[in-house]
Length: 314
Ligand code: APR
Image 1 (cartoon, rainbow, N blue to C red):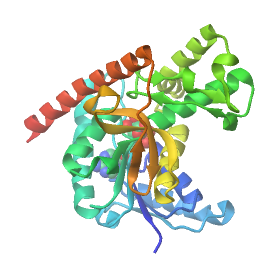
Image 2 (spheres, rainbow, N blue to C red):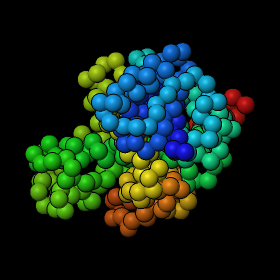
Image 3 (cartoon, rainbow, N blue to C red):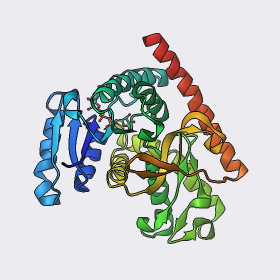
Image 4 (cartoon, rainbow, N blue to C red):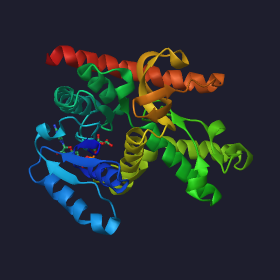
């Protein structure tokens, strides 16, 4: 039996996650959405490309949560994007309801799954899912750092005109303006970028990384990014299913690491078959740690809002 990966939400991001997961041949992919025909149509289209792309796993689409039964991994991308005129609170409430109801289905039908959240506002949505699922912290995480890091890497590659493959970099913290790109840990073919790029320019690249999501929204006008987010989530799925012990940031429930307690925030982890195999608790410099803790306090505030929603919505 092949591993089973369910992707909830067959929109822009969900479809990319599904396709990239299938292309890595890690397991059968089930694409779920509430819109009739949408996941079926996209899944069929993707499988019709299998002979050309050369993958062997199956991709199917469904409107029924029964089909996620016994999934090994569940990726949640369902939700609405913020539309003009929609407040941050409205977005939080709408996506809270969606993530809560999906998490109830996952808890019942895929109780052993490793769950990766992609829906924004990311850290608040992982917290929502974590509360409903009641799974151990190793099995519930958010995809944000993997995306922010690939953006940071891409900008460094552009700056130096080198292959993006040779650039490694890490972005911690919450997904948003308070994210924490760490130039000290960025390198090109093993050479620290601090040796290659002037400080002032690094600061500009860091700023562009922080605003990376907004830059895409401003260009697209009708939606948000999906190629990089979808690929980043597929990277996490592959690391889990193949037990690769890949090192990347993920939003995890911290229990004292980095001096932070009971908050979902992005830190470097080792990803494997049990989900979070290990959290890497690095000795950060004072200013880096202060930025990470500021990020965590921001999420704590959001978690409080989520707690209120749980109480209010019953
Ligand atoms: N169950 C399944 N699917 C749902 C549900 C639900 N309860 N509610 C909404 N959806 C589906 C919608 O029908 C839609 O097809 O979620 C999909 C969302 O797709 P898009 O609107 O294309 O949004 P997308 O660009 O994929 O972004 C999804 O990921 O990166 C984040 O900020 C982004 O929160 C957003 C999410």
